[in-house]
Each structure stands twice: as structure tokens, then as C-alpha cells.
Image 1 (cartoon, rainbow over the protein chains, first blue to last red):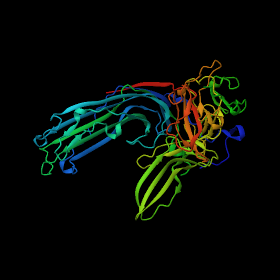
Image 2: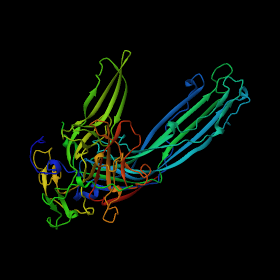
Image 3: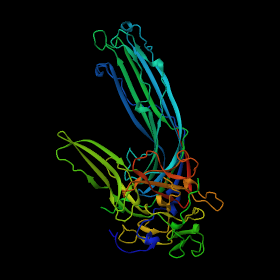
Image 4: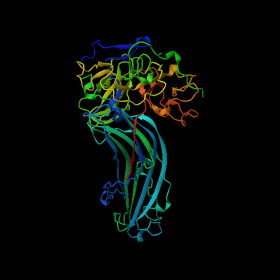
Length: 283
Length: 298
């Protein structure tokens, strides 16, 4: 590779620092392809993200610890295509992207709860009614200005993981909801007040972010948003010390998802005409 | 707060020699800067090399017969840490268990650039175990410079075709054939990113503890360009270390009250011993000519 030949031209600046070197490719776009190579996509977000169907299951009684409490937790990220367009090359060109604008990040959490079993062994306590109730525990908003940030150079392959830039997390505490509390009366081995957890799983954090990928034909813009699904169970013991769901079995589920509706942002994609793989110096 | 001055001592003056290529229909000797395709005194952004990510440093010896019990990766971001010899993409800390002893190994990844100065370098991601690449530019992040800018952004134009100045890129053994579109070093058909400014603490002004930069203003004090016409890259350094570590540069009236259009190194998450070291500002010579609005909804 002729990287050390002394050819071409240079212009020098102060202290003989090289300002321009004729061997070094310009990081620029082809003016004859400017409409595709230097393009801004303005995204107006009006989506409503549903709770993710995670396939989560109720903790089984066989898996509960000796105290009679179990949790099954799942979480993840949904990656949705916002838009794509053709870049006009027949290979994957190198470039980078920036995002600027406003992210309107919201969190949405719902709790559902059921209770079953006989209260006769537990008289004097406070038990949630054996019905399913949904609590809309939180819808909190935060407008986040997107400081223009650089995305990574285009990747050689398309994968499902992608670049994570402009990662924004929303952190909030959802207020208490005392009607969810469970009170076991004195005299019972499990005497006390059990606060059914209502906070968002994952330490009160939901996030959303944007990323861009490029392949041999298209530029893709993706929105990513996080979800959580946490299922709890208390199945108490009967007087013989055995777990017996006919005595008391309470279950509750907290589901969360990040919402981005109301966000407006510009995704600026800047493509050079180069194939990154053919420019490698070290092999 | 007093306006952050352009450091005139570092200004690279316009040169009336070298190479100028005018747009078709204009005279290169007399036309305005925004009627030029290429000017050899412009601080254009160039690529000095693309490198595969490699292991460049290891502290500690990987034990034989040990069990790897934990791995922590610190990825530097979309742009790299750098010193005069290397650019760095990530640091991986591994802990091994050998019988009852813990052995720690720290691996640093990146590439050797041999430029003799710490450069601005971009990186691509490691995806599914496939390492990304490192793209090294010609910007020396340790040396202050404020480049002059065109009075107005270059306008949108097209239909240039095969016209102007071309040279052969370092990775080609011969000039590209007629009709080939890439493989050039200088190619006056390409509209380059420009290096607007490199600022270090040497020119941070008025004893500030941070590096600040503002868009240029005209004679009436009105900003010529908005803050979003630029892209900025911040770096911090640890005490006497030679390594410039990425720390995002932001504009934030909340973090920097009274300075709505000033870019600073993010002072958040401060780490003992680290201080602002460099702020690099790039700009395009024009705004994007193609803006498409898309509704993302269901």
C-alpha cells in the first residue's frame, strides 16, 4: 500500500504543520449526489407504544422461597424503523450522523393485582379485594433538548443491535398507593404490613434513543424504547407451614414502557463516497 | 459574561497563493470564497487512515488455568481517546480467579497512527463480536487554531461532473480510472467538512476552568450561524497524562447560565484529577439542501 510515498502536494501552515495533504481523502460529500448524501430527516413522533407482550409468567408456587414470595422480571428494548431512503451508491458508503431537536420522553406504568384464597385464618388483617384492578401509576413527561451529537461511522453489516447514541433515560419516583398494601394481623406468624411494590422495575428508569444504519442501498433511521414487565407473588403458608394458595395468594404485575410521542428531531446524515474497508492501513 | 474572543494569534490567515478551483462559470482569481469548489488554504477535514481495532496495551498477565469471572468494558464513544502515537477505542478490565487468588488484567484497544500529534478520530461499533474500525483525521487536537470562515455558507450546487483538481489517495496504487467515483485524495468535486476551531486551555480566556466556544458574529454582533450548524467534540486529560479522553461538548444554558449559545466541555460527572483539555468544532460549508419531514406514528 503506497502510504509512505512522497507524492502529491501539500499546503503548510504555521510551524510547517500540514494543512492539506493531497494523499489524504477529503471527508466530504459528492456535490453531484448532494440530495442523497447530505440529507436531513425531520421526524415528528406521534406513536403510542403498547406494553410489550413479553411472555412473562406468574411465579409458580414451587419456586417460591420459604417466605412465600417470588418475582419474575423481564425487560428489553423495542427497535422500530422510523424511515429509510436510498443513498444512490451500489456499495455501503462511509459517513456519520447527528441528531438535534427535542425528545419528549414519557414513562407509563400500570399495576394490576389479584388476590384469592380464604381469609378465615388471617382474620383481622387488611387484604386487597380479589378483583383485578389497574392503576395508572405514572405518566411523567420530560422534554430533553438533543444537543447535536455525532453518531458512529457506518457499520459494515446490518444487525439488530445498532448504534446507541443520544441515549436518554427518564428517572422518576411514582407516588405510593396505599390501597395496594397488605396487612397481616398480629398473632399470625407473618404479622406485618406488606407494601406491594409499585415502582417501575429497573430503578425507575425508562429510556429511548435514536440510531442510524447504512447498508449497500439504504440509510435507516430507528427509534428504540425500553420496556419492563415484573410479576410478583405472595402465596402464604397455612397453619401447618405449607404453601397453600387456598389460604391466601396475592399476585400483582407492574408493566412499564417509554413513550416518545411529541418528540421532534432532525437526523442529519452525511455520507462520503468511500468504502471504509478498502481504506484500512493495518491489514 | 464577556464574549469569548477569537484568538487572533492563532488565526490561519487567508493565503493568496496555492490552489483555487472555482465553480464552473466563475473566475478563480476574483470570485468569492463561496463560489470556490476548492481552496488549498481552507481547513478541510481529511482522513489520514482507517485502522482495524487492535490490542495496543495490556496491564497484567493473563493467567493460564484461571477462570474469567468478570469483564467490564469502557467504550470511549463515537470518537476516540488519543495521544501522539495511538488512538484508543475502549478499555476492557478482566478479572480471573486462580484457585483462591484474583488476577486483574486491563486491555486497551485502538490503533497506532504515527502522526506525531493526537488526532481527532472516529470509530464504528463492535457488533456481535466483530470489531469496528477507527477513522483518523488530520486535526491536531492539542494545538489551538481558529480558522477563518466564508462570509456565508456555500450555496447548493450540482452538475459539476469531472472538473477541477484530483490527486491519488494513499490507499490506491494508481489514479482511479475515468468514470470511477472514488479513490481520490483531493477531489474538488467533494464538498468538505471544515475545521472551524481547535481550542485548548491555552486560549480558554479569562482564567476560566472550562473551554468555551461561540459561533462567529458579524460586525454588528449578530451571530452569523446558529449553534446547530456546528459539531463539537470535547476532550479531558488527567493531570500530566498525554492521553486526551472524550468528554462530550454541549451547549446548555442550564449548565452554563447566561451563555445561551456557548459550547463547553460537559462539567457533569466530574472525575478527580481530570480537567478540560480540548474542544474541536467542525462545520459544513452549507446546510443540508434536502430536508424531508417524516411522521413516525401508528
